[in-house]
Length: 393
Image (cartoon, rainbow, N blue to C red; front, side, top):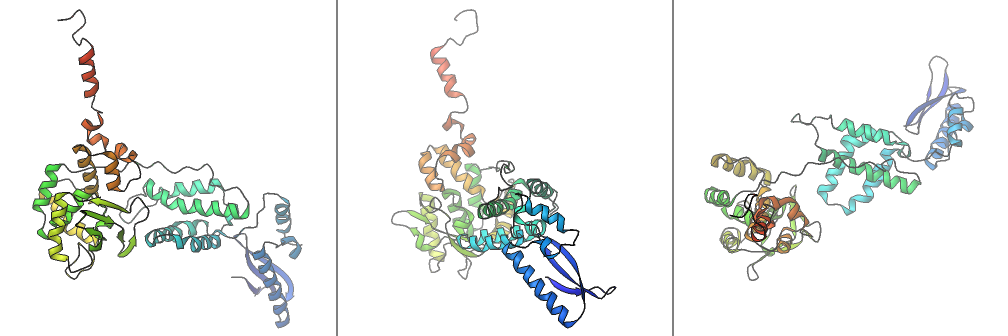
């Protein structure tokens, strides 16, 4: 906050203000009187207005200041940019973008801004942030420790850097400078561990789980629904006549949201197991909105279910600890192994193409994709003599 103050040693007034992300104090020759304070305050207000408009000339206001020549040289350079502080532009960008984001995404971006980006770049002029500063900041993130004393993962670092990239690119577009983020690629993220359950394990889980969650996990294992999708499933999205589940809502952090894209909004065909499970569930929760809910009809809290039902069950059965999301991977691998059409599976999963299916899951179904070499082995047997060299038997 700009202010007019007095130096106790001399009794002279001086101006205290911020310019280009730095704090400056400039001495005046005026004594501390009411009239002089009013005069200096008016000057300070004019300076602040010029800084906001981008017309402030340091040397014109303070020709005798040792900083005057420095800023004069900078202003004659084509590299000089009159741009707002990163903190100011970031807040403007956030307010403009927030309307098109889901609440959960908005909250995530807000955390990245408040916890990482604003403390690092907030007082810097957005047009003066350099590529070296960006790379140095990213390298520092790799040393940050979480509450569990773990370092930030490459994926988390990329999520923090994404708002920075978007802010700098947007500022570059508006203020006509080259974005320093050009040429900076995201960190490589290790592939997500896919650890699907075998069919025998699925049967063991469903047969052993608490009866009030048996239908829940049956639907999870044989529809491939995401946690937020099944927890947000309401009875108006269950069509017993067509034997379909319409995936159109999710629950994230207790808030009901509509699916984020056209691929996620989809119809899942019910197998007989799923159909029967939902029929049984209707007898229990049919009077409520949500298919799977508490005794009072409120949506399930997935963290609570995971900690109190899922992980204890896996420990009891002697199975390796795996996230509930592995039920979705299990559905995909079971469909593929059974010979279902990859296009149909992609539609059930909410994927726009089959590319992800074969990239992520093909190693779990070698007989389907013929990655085990058996097809080539049959070709050799049919067309070549496979006996050792030296003649046919």
